[in-house]
Image 1: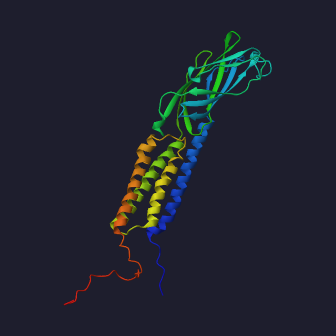
Image 2 (image 1 turned 180 degrees about the horizontal axis):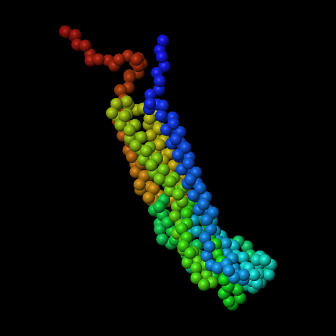
Image 3 (image 1 turned 90 degrees about the vertical axis):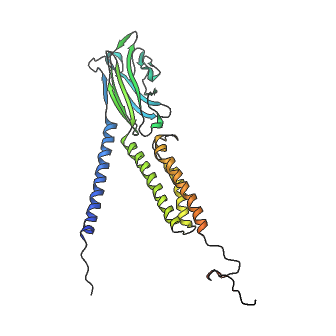
Length: 305
């Protein structure tokens, strides 16, 4: 009767090590998600909120379009104190919100007209989308207000609602002006996913190279399941590349460091495997011959025949 052997030391540590690695991965993911959430909850203040008669401005970055080099800014203006007759819903005189050149337009709110939220485009400068996923851009966001013929104090807040980008904000306000120097770059989630995509592309290409070497060195002929897997990998990488957050155009850093090279390697492996497999295939049997019988040997020559 055989006795059950006790598990070796390596096997006994395998499951705890896997569990510890899984817990560490989950903990790192939760930590990264908390950081992303805190970035979205961060509010930057500029201007002065001390005067009772002022204009409050709530600005939030709704989305960043790197291809168009433009971000969309949602602005809500609220006059306070004697600048409004109905608790901030409308100004008692025409109110003009002066903005920086990057915002491209000033906002005018008519007297005794309800103020609504406005979305305005902001031009981005610097950077290039071909640097994806390490591209970054800059914009100057400034606000000043005039009611009637005189300037009024402003207090502005700036927040971010685009989870694909992380803003770095510096306050540069002056008298009666609220100003933000904004630099936006890809969020940590986008960076991690893009780096994972590049690593996965190279891992798949290396796997196809190993499979090609195995098939060609052993002269196994045309192994159709293996060829189907290789061809499927070739087209799957193209679909995988199109899932990159932000839809970067062809020609970005992602392509030149991973995608284009791995596609070329896999295509070359498929062609090499087909050619080597076709040469290694046995000759076709003649019609009516038994496929299980060995191939005929050389013809026997009889003496005197």
